[in-house]
Image (cartoon, one colour):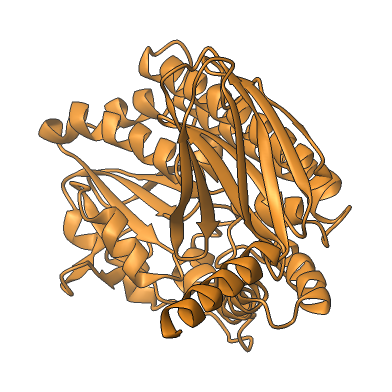
Length: 383
């Protein structure tokens, strides 16, 4: 009797599980016979495996999962190729893709958000390809460093303006707007929620909308916390009269800087007298940081033995991120905890980052980035 009771109970439990509202993702992956297809959740804590199937013949597949309580993000993966999509209810998402161009040549139906996510993904890939081409050009010395930096800044600005207008502010309540906030270039967030006032507005628009519809969702709470932290980091401090000690200028020929490096040691700009110095103000979490530092690394490797030094001032809000990123850089890396409201950056009239200055061997300011037509030639002239 007991055995019959437990069997019946298990049957009821399975029936209840099957009756839970589910979403479905189905379709075909052509020319992928024998390949494993994975369904994964793109959760806040990272990628979570959900299901998998070995593709056969036509490559047809079908996955079912419990409906999320609020809009969530998922992905299909074959090898290292990924298709991102979103689900907010019990919809059926249909995906068809060739194995060779799985991540770019796919079609998606049944999910307007997923169609927008595809558009954003292709735009981001195009941006990354353009940046890679620029980097190759500067590596081959076919374009000057200043042209490289200007082109990079223009590409990023145009991309952000496009995405802001057509995806974020146009429909902040859509999952595609949330997806846009966390796109990356060179593994850095394109929209910086901690250091850029303008970018924080984008995060705030989506956070407000998400909170209105799903106030108890983890993503709503997480996005809200990001916005609050960013607003605190970029809040304009009370105006203070900027006082620069006269001796700091007279003795060194430049406004001296005295900040701590990653090991806690105070490093002074004036102590580099006798070297040609690139003074660089930057934010490591900026999307152009990686390519900018690559350009600096190229110059450093060439001319450090001839007397070149780099004094790089981080304006990052996140100290841990700065330490982690700067750990392998061979030059002087310091950080101003005042971030974008650094009085030191203000004294050098830094308007944007990265911002470069050249200091000669006598510790005198030689040039600033916007007046330098060829940074390498200008560096060589100081050595």
